[in-house]
Every structure is written in C-alpha cells, then in structure tokens.
Image 1 (cartoon, rainbow, N blue to C red):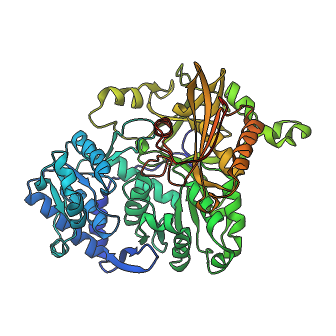
Image 2 (image 1 turned 120 degrees about the vertical axis):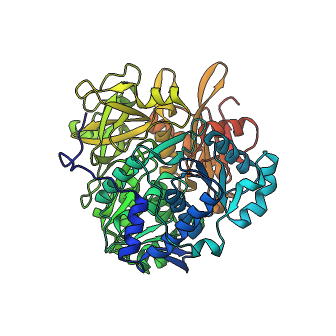
Image 3 (image 1 turned 90 degrees about the vertical axis):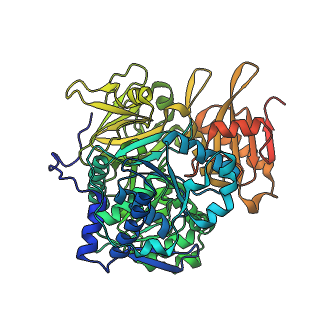
Length: 592
C-alpha cells in the first residue's frame, strides 16, 4: 500500500464550486472565466465570472419554473461551448444532478441517450434548438415527450439576476458521470459535492492551477477529464480557460498547439494518442510558428501512457520551446472523480523497462536495470512502461491479486484499488455492483474500503505503473498477453497505421482461442502495398510477444468502433468484423 505524497493533508473546509463561482463574480466580475474558439482556433466569444453566474442563474430559474426539484437528474446534451458551461453550472445552482452526455447526432445516438435517460430517471433534457429540431423525431420514436426537451441557447437565460444557489450537503450528488463503456453497458458514477470539492483542490494543487495561469482545452466536456479539468478546475482555481470544440483537434491537431502558443497557456493536455498525432501530423513549418515555452504542465492520461510518445513529443517540439519537464503522465478514472496519481510536476517523466515474458507469465516486474549487459541489449525482450508517479493528495492505492483479493508485494502486478475522499459513492441504482466494486476490498491496517478499478498495475519504489485492463487480458495457450501491449507494437512500428487505430482480441476457431489484429490504415496510404504491412505486423508481433496472429485485417480509417472518448471497443470490433461490417482493405488469415 502507498500513502499519499506529501504526508498528512490539511483539514479541508468544503466549498461548493457554485459558491466559488458566485464569490469570484462578486470579487472580480469582469475577469474572464472562459474564452471560446472556433474549430479553426478563431476567437468566438467569452464569459466573465459575472456573465457565467447570470447564465447559470438563468438556467436554474428555468429549471425551478418547470418544477425541477433539488436532486432531480437533468441530461445535458448541449454542444461544447458557452451553453454547455451555463447549463452545467445552472444545474449546480439549482441543486439538480447534471448528467453530461455527448450531443445527439443521429437515430442510434439518440437510442443510447434515451437508455441513459431512463436509467438516470431524468425529468428534463437540456440541449440546443438546432439539436432538438434535428433529433426531436428520434426522441419521439423512443417515447420521449417533446416537453422534456428544453433549449438553453436563448438570450433570455443570459439576463437573469443572480440568485442564491440551492443549499447542498456534502453527500448530495453533484452529477452522474456515465462511463463510456469499453467493456460493458455504461454505468452512472455518483459524484457527490464532497467528492468534487476535495478533488478540485487536489487537482489544482497538482496542476499548479492558480491565478496568473491559463488553460487550453479541446477535451469533450461530457467526459470526466474534459469536464473536471477544463470546466470546473479553472473556476475553482481562479484562472481562465480557453475552450475549443473537440472536433477541432481531430480535424487539425495544429489548432490545439497553436492555441497553447497564442494564448500563452500554462496548462493543457490530453490522451497519449493526441501527443502522438501532433508528432506525426504537424509539419516543420507549422512547428516553427509555435512558442510553447510557457506550457508548464502537459498532462497525459485517460488512456495508456507510452514513454516512447513522451520522448518523441519532447524531441519534436523542443525547437518550439517545449520543456520536457512539463510532461506529466497521470492515471485516473471516473469512479475516483478523475485523478488518482500523477507524475511530480517539474521532474522528468521516465519509464521502466521490464522483462516482457516475466510480466506476462509471472505477473511481476523484472527491471532491465537488474539484468546483465548482454540481456539489456536484447531490445525485443523489454517492455517500456511509463511511470505514472505518486498518489495525489489524501488518496491511497492498494495493489491486490484479482483472484484472491490479497495485497501484492512491491513489483507484483495486480488490480489497482483506490481509497480516499474523491472515490465516488457507487453506481446509480446498482447496489450489488456498487458493493462488489466499491466495498469488497479492505486493507488490514486501517480497515478502509477500496474501489476496484479494473486496471492492472504495480507499485515500485512508491510509484505507480499501469500495465493494462483486467478484462482486456488475452489468454492464448495458457499464456497471458495485454491487448494494449499488442496494439502498441502495431502502432509504434507501422507508420501507415492510424494512431490509436488498432484492436487486438481473441476469436474462437476450431475450438481454439486465436489472436486477431485489426488496424486502420492512414487515408493517404490506402492504395500502397498493404501486403507488406500485413507481413510486418505478423513479424513484429512474433518478435516482441512470441505469438502468431491467426488473422490480420487492415481497414479504412474510422472503421474501428470507439467510445465517445476515443477508446477502442474491442468486443464491438470483433462483432463488426464477424458481421462483415468493416471495410477491409487487405487481410491475412492463418486458416487459409
């Protein structure tokens, strides 16, 4: 077990984030809270603290007028931007429980949204007039009354007088964060006011978020990282945030770094694949226009962190003034509000090379530093795992054997379990699952309950290393393989493969479990010699993992099913492949 870095934490006097907003509105009403950019990075609008408070009060007044009581669930389906920010803070102002979801785009998306609406028992859906007009018929097909759909993009909401926010207890729900569901049905994580208050103080302490700094974020506000780091932490810390539409990064990664440069951002970040895309897709001419010297903390999380990506980004953008000490790998999950562990700021991010075979077969870390010089020279033998760092304020991590529940020794791989004030209350309306995930693991010293993350990792010298997902472990002929490890081998060695564009899973054939690789090919490479790519993938998988893929499929970009946060859905990919729904460009099948 590891205690939080920094010793004992001070007693925390809880202040609700909506009360913080009101206090900032009173003290510095004209100070910018948020600036909003277009998909090309052009300025669109801004919200001062006073304007945000008034907009939130307007949404709250509208909810009260519709008879929405404190504690009622309200779905947020607004496009990222001023209306989304106003709607979320408006729910907090009214004491309603916000349920952030991505805005509706088509009939299938609406069906998924309605399933969450019913699970949450929401009484109101906040969205834009355009979305309601475009998708209202789809909601009607699902039995959702038109009266439940409320537009929040009218000017009337901006003119409301500030009111007194609803009184809230620490254990009352602030919002429900529905998980993106890579391995199962989405579940509503219950985040209380107390969880959020503790977490925002802890997060800003790690980010260095304070007046005088600036954040830039393109992350979707309907996911935990974008919502908490991009919307809530800046208001809590008193520094402005420049918000960009999530699609701006997908369309052109340069727009993100250009915004960091132009707005002299001190804090920004994203998943590991975002840094990889910047390395791959920005030209030397574009990089020459950037000044990243003010970027003090570049957080890297929400998916497996790759040391190779960290090193590549630092090298590629050194000419733009990027300081390697700014890169900060982190680990977290919605069930812990967001952040669990993060690399110590202003220290160089590093990785640990461990014996790949021992990690897979014995579930323990055997560092290369302890091996002979000859063994260290065998590059294929070693897997580099990024060091996440130490557990952040007031939280505790315990590594346990996923089968026995017993604590693991230092360097032994087990399930990462988390305890502390930021750990959520459980899953909405799922008492049995909540009991199994949040309350079955206890330590033998303090007797505290730990939340089971479903992630695998180990502690070494007081620092956390994450190795994969428990449910994504592949077993072939009695040997263990990490899906993410296999996928990383493909994307790291094949330039023609789209970053974050690979899925590794098993499929049954002749009563055997067989490895299948599906990889997306860059659009400009679709007409090249793809047979060579297939052969290279087979070779690299064998060299690094000593397992032969049964099948390798190359598909068009955008074919892999992913969650709304960009994580590959392996089970859905297997189903789509078996149903013939993927556009296959080339393939090799060991069955002939």
